Image 1 (cartoon, helix red, strand yellow):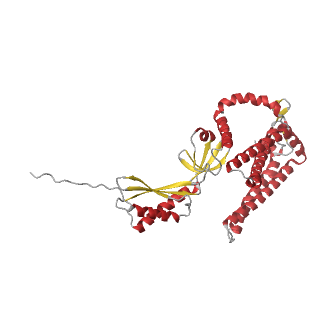
Image 2: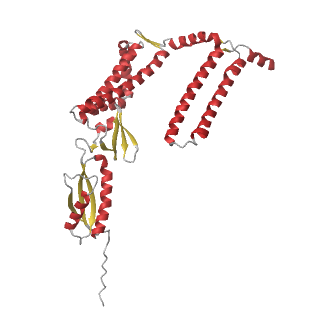
Image 3: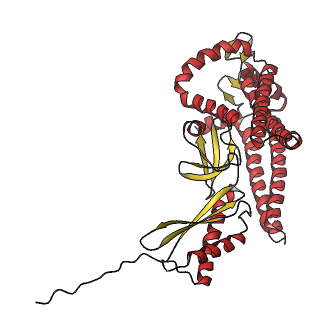
Length: 378
């Protein structure tokens, strides 16, 4: 058994029908052991740099993290270069034969449609195409927003529609050109996509519905990025509108991904559809003995000091109801930005409590008066 093991480790390595020029022992000594030492040295150097060099420095933590990321990137490039050297050193002169063999395996087509030959290389080449299409779409949208649309006298809704159409148009055009460059004949694949579309249409009804709803949002603009809306009883800001879904950031900094079909098929409470100004309503009860004219004066003087309220339209005080514990009074004040609704309402509530306390105005609490009659004397 020992003799067979020794013969195995010193004989040329064979995997399947492929023979290599090196033995398992040579692979261990010339590749795997140096590789283990290389990664050990990589981890050790990063640890020493982080703990012994960067940590004692009296600079901001953010700067330390940025410097450490740059150093780690350089080390990774060095590790990759050494790894490539180890591979070349192991295969030596036969590296060309192995590369040619691997290339034949990857370039051998496993699917043919007309003049299009789909291989693993073709699929790999589609990855940078889709990445390039996404990058060009984002760059073109930013350029149109900053350099063109902002200088034109068009509404924000129209800017959103134009920039979205340009983004998706450039993305589709880049993908079509890229697929043609790598040898995929789109016309020959049209029939295949049509057949697959019939089968996938039944299983992807929701995806297709969300896609069509995304187009409706882009053209009709019931919402746009930056709007404050109410969806599923949760209030938040529209961060990003995609063809399939819309990303909403709630007031508690939670992210909601809502399918576009829900936004189009249901009622949308948009606080900033045409006018970003909204009315903030603060309700408060006052005792029946209170002077309502004084209360109106105090509330109007208080709201004039608000950093959120607008001077025009002016705020209003409304006597809404005579309830069991007191008179219900509401302060209706305008603010210029819908996203400041929560902050404005909280500021008003605090100042109402302070102003009423200074003016001697009583805010009643629920109470019940119990009258007990004496029983008749016999």
